[in-house]
Structure formats: C-alpha cells, structure tokens
Length: 273
Image (cartoon, rainbow, N blue to C red; front, side):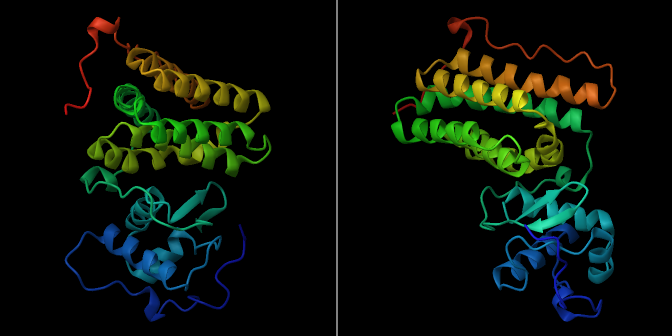
C-alpha cells in the first residue's frame, strides 16, 4: 500500500474527472459511483491513497459528510479501504464484494458501540442459520474453515492481514446463512467499525484468541448445532464489544444477548424442499 498521493492527477480542483454526473441520486451515491468509475478505468490504482476527505469535498463541490458516506459505500463493496490516521486507499484487489443496502442510515454517523450491538444480534442469527442450512453443503462449510485457517496463519504483526482475514471469515459465515437481505444489511453495517477492528489486534494473544474462537464457531456450524453456533459467535463478539467499551471509557453493561436456552427453544430454520 503506497503513501503517495495520486501523482500529478487530480491536483487541479477543476479537473473534469472529479465532476459529479447530473443525475437524480443521493449525493453519497454519486460520489461512490464516480470514485468506482475512476478505479475501474485505472485512473486510481490498487493500493493508491485517495485525496483527503476535505480535498475530495472541494473537488466534488459537496459536503465532507457526503464524501465520507460515499467512500463507506465503496468500502462495504471492497473497492476502497480506510487506514485510520493515514486516509482512504484503493483496495489491493478492488473488486466489489457485498453491495450495501440502500438505506437512509447509510448516510448517518452512529456510535461504534451501537453498531457493535447490532452486529452481535445480526451475526448470532447468521451463525445459527449457517449451522441449520450450510452443514449439509460441504462447500460452504469448507469455505468457513478455510477462512478461519487463513486468519490463524496471518502474521501477528500485520494488522492489515489480520483485518482482511477476520472480515473474510465473518463474511463467509454470513453468506452461509443463505439470506440475501441479511448479507446486504451486513455489507452496510460492518465497515463502520473496520478502523477499530484493525487497531484491536494489538498483541499475539488477541490474535490467538480470535483465531481459536473462529475455529470454535466453524466447528459448531460444521456439526449443524444452531444453538452452539449462535452462542460461540455471540460470545466472540461480546468480547470485542466489552473491549471497545473499555477503550471508549464507557461504563457499559452490555445486554445479555441470550442464545436459545436449548434446542427445543430454537426455531426451525431448515430450508424447506
């Protein structure tokens, strides 16, 4: 990932490449469409740092909040990524992954702890669905196990690799749930806490614990245990939630987010033939 600004390109704020199309769309969507086009045409290269948010706002002639929302849309699709303290970059492999759901919430700023609370609920259900639906589909289960192994094998001192492999594991679980709407919501939600997630891998012990818990989640999904999958995923994310609340110096007593009490309490999510 290079720290160089786009060399000689886009320094002029009148550069037509930075003009937004005259279309009846929300401004953040226009921004994301234009940046995505510059990536697709090679005007912005993989690993290249984007201009700062204030500079992009001046070039596009829009509010900085619209620029940030537009970039967050692209982040959710895997086109760009943020390195807190250094700025926005074109992803090394800038191919769209999960398209974010169009929702007014995508243009708002939310507290990281609020986002984590929703993430806990969302991914707990996703893990249970994956156990119910993917256990009989070897390809899905093998993909989850592969992503777990890649996270375990990532270097302790490479936070970018740790974040990338962590995201790939959780995305594999969500996709194995077999619910397109859930996947779309996930695509809009999770990038909001990517910066903190990257910075959370501070020690080898944190990485080892994360990798072990990923393995446990993958095991419960493989054996088709909906309750176990939900409990292990919920416990895994609650650990991150509590760490984040301590970092924010917030005396937060998290909700219990209970898993189902026993198998008889669990709804039947099996796919009907």
